[in-house]
Each structure stands twice: as C-alpha cells, then as structure tokens.
Length: 132
Image (cartoon, rainbow, N blue to C red):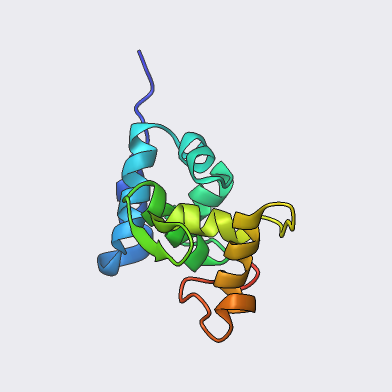
C-alpha cells in the first residue's frame, strides 16, 4: 500500500486563505505533480523554501520567488533591453551573474539593468538591485 501524496494546493489555500495568489497555486500544483524538493530544484531554491512559501512562513524576499515561479512555471516573460523577450526567471538569473569585462553581453546587461554607461538614466524596470 502506497502512502498518499500530500495535497499541496489544499495546504497553500489553508495557509493563504481566500486571497491565495495565483503563483502560489501554480507552485502548489507543481509540487503535487513532482515534489517540493523537485519544484525547488527547478526554481533554483531549496525544498524547505518551497515548503515555507506554501505554508506562508517564508522569511525571504517573496517578490524574488514570485518572479522565479512566474517565469519558470507560469511562463511569464519580460522585455529585456539587451536580450529582448525572456522569462522572468531568466531575467532574475541574469541579474545575479557577476560582471565580466571579458564578455560584451554581460557588460551590456550590467549597464542596461542598472541604467549606467550607454544606458545612463534608463534603468530597467525589472532590475531588483542586489538579486542574490
């Protein structure tokens, strides 16, 4: 006899109430299809972070996790001034990459995100500052 899988959607709705955000439901559904650890790995976060988000106990930057869920699980896109249309997850990943003068694209992304250099005064609206 196998153990029944947890109902992550029910857990999330119980914790978040009637105004449970759509991205939380999408995350819970993904966890029901795979597992919290697998969903976390896909998002680039820990399974523990996923569990805490579903239970509304996550102490980290919820907006960053929301962007990862929307980009990876919900296929949300943003317009990047350098790469054009990319997923919100990729946008966040690009912001986390280290500056590298040896890579012209990294230089352009760095300046476009921050509104410096040739992009002076035109900071990208999707830039989240220190995205680590």
